[in-house]
Length: 256
Image 1 (cartoon, rainbow, N blue to C red):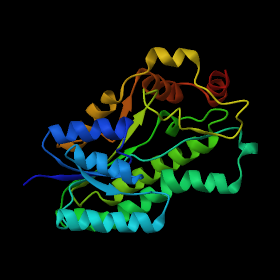
Image 2: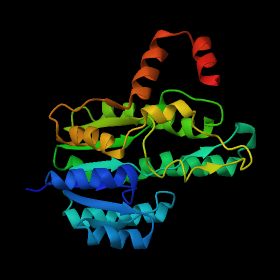
Image 3: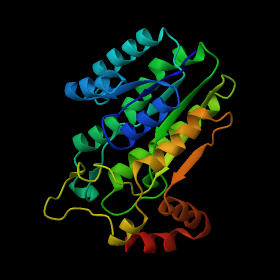
């Protein structure tokens, strides 16, 4: 039987690359998109387009019901990929802006996963994969809000993985560093005159979204998927240094 996978934020970048990669491997890909025109475009490409705004509780509920209906309550995989970045010094960020950052990057993930989990438990197998970030491992000036949402996602995923230990459902985190997508262009900057930008050296280590797709395919297809999948040299180095160096020295490195 063909396995069904639901991908959020699938209209471009990492989500689109993973949708194509999983479809090529024989999965039935349900593609969640926020804009109706993107839903139509994904359907025209051979995917099952589903409208979903993870920042809208009613939209998440409706999308989950549609996924369950279309899969006959037989869902194998969920890839929580949708998200955005809010950049700026913390003193420039309001409570409502921070709530929106968490609503999209974290609260929507929790709601959608809990709604779809029964359809996965019923099969006694499955995969839940999350797009985290190198910012789920470290935080830097100007990226505190975004990093906080990804730190929360990391902790939540660890708990979920252990809670689902005996269900046959496995949980993995994808931790990209710099990736060539529209993510940076779509970042919400709280200071337009002083935008938070990636250091120039990051461009040397930036990879295409297909690098993430390879990790996601392993997470869905392997009988023993990894708990975490670092992507790009930046993430590997940061993870190593964080384990090796004292906090104050890491602060000094990250402030530069």
